[in-house]
Image (tube, rainbow, N blue to C red; front, side, top):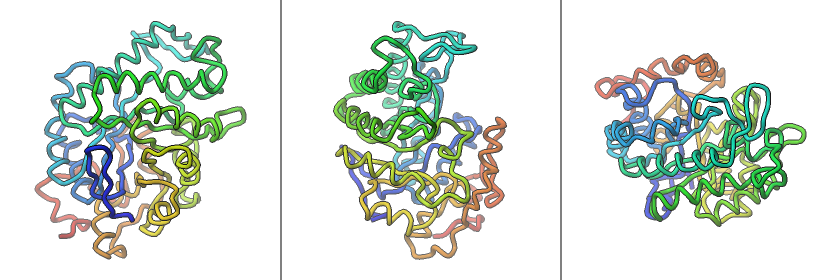
Length: 351
């Protein structure tokens, strides 16, 4: 099943493999980023999700148009491309949050509407430059996820309190973005299915949320977990089992009919195949493994899995990312230095 195609509306994915949105610190509108994403497309993955990028950057159509070469290059290699839109805890130069806490004031209803409008405008500009879709980053303790989690949302208005109210921002985002982009453009939502902390959100609430998002015209739900990049749910350690979050994806998949993405330390064909065959998800995302070897899909499909350069989950990439430096990988010294002219010299490349 790993290499079965999947059609989502009018978008045909050549297989069930997704390159997860790994933060790189490479920038985006430059040749290095273009070559980095193009190499993952050339390696055979079906869908690439470009890492979380501030939604404010896409409010200007000119900024988005600079990504046309990247979109074109990825498409030429046969992959489809989605951009993950991210919003932090800053608005108009002020620190805001769903609820007041030290260093942050509570965002107002009017300001929430401003955030929603930003996502709608950004999605429209991404559509205009050729992306197949956008993904809302509603996971890992960031601003959008903070509305869903009872750990960070203590509001007393319609955006806070019970689970129904904490779901409201997510639903309003999807509705506004759908109106901006029309029916054919894909809308994805990355969601932490559980906070993993006492008093946090539960998988039952997340399954209910996923169904509500589907009812409000979402196309794909991307299931992760955790409250931030410093916890083991967000970035599973080497000791974690393969397919760490697959069971969470499975519980959500029982409640929705739209495609579900499972993620979490997937490394082998057998691991990805097991997730799909057991009906836990429709798509499987690989992150760190495709940093170590972008040609994993091509090698596996050709029956050459013994040639795969395996990620050893040392997390050097995430340590560099957290430090604000470009990510690096001991298993793949070419990471971030990919170039069209030398790809055939790479030990990873195969015909």
